[in-house]
Structure formats: C-alpha cells, structure tokens
Image (cartoon, rainbow, N blue to C red; front, side):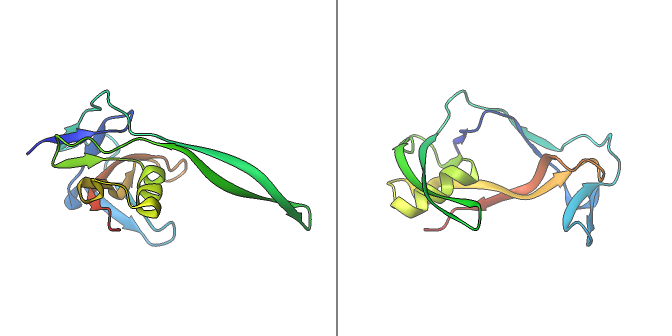
Length: 131
C-alpha cells in the first residue's frame, strides 16, 4: 500500500493504552509525556494545498464577516492508495468534489502531551474523508 503524507510534518501514531481521555477538555492526553509513538509517517515533501482568498462581506455589530473564495486547489496524486491531508484541504475537496477524494484521509483523535498547553503531538489513527 502506498501512503503519501501530504502535510509538512510527521504524523505520530499512539495506541489507546498510551493515552487517557480528559472529559473536561474533551481531548486525549499521553499517560506519560515521554511516551514514544508506535508508528510515524514522515512528510513526503509533496504538499497538497488550497489557496483561499478572504474578502470582507460586511460588519455585524462590529464583527467582520468574511466570505471565502478558493483560488487554487491542488489535485490529488494518482499513484497512492492513502493520501493524508489537512482538514482545510479535505473540507474544500469535499466542497468541490475533486477527483481522487476516495483516497483522502485526515488525522483521527488527536493526542496531546500537556494539559496546560494542549497542542496536538500525534493521533490514534486516520479518518477517511467522505464526500
């Protein structure tokens, strides 16, 4: 199976026994912050990007309201079985129904190391992008 990590960073995978779910923050955290991932998919060097132009539509009660216009959406490479992309790319791929969407995946169930500064460091798996 050919997998393309079309994001700019490695994707670290953890097992469920390495994490716990914090109900208050609704996030998975490592049991031990020094836990090593069980699997890593390195970035491929091929990035799939979407270029979005934001235009101010109106201001409601002092809050700026923007509309988005896609200027460019990279095509999905054909030579892969799984293509891992950002949520932004996935959402526009769904919106425009691009060819190859059946190959797209995003990370599933992000994992965090620090409850006081929750930044994702990995995930439990992948989610299939559904049109």
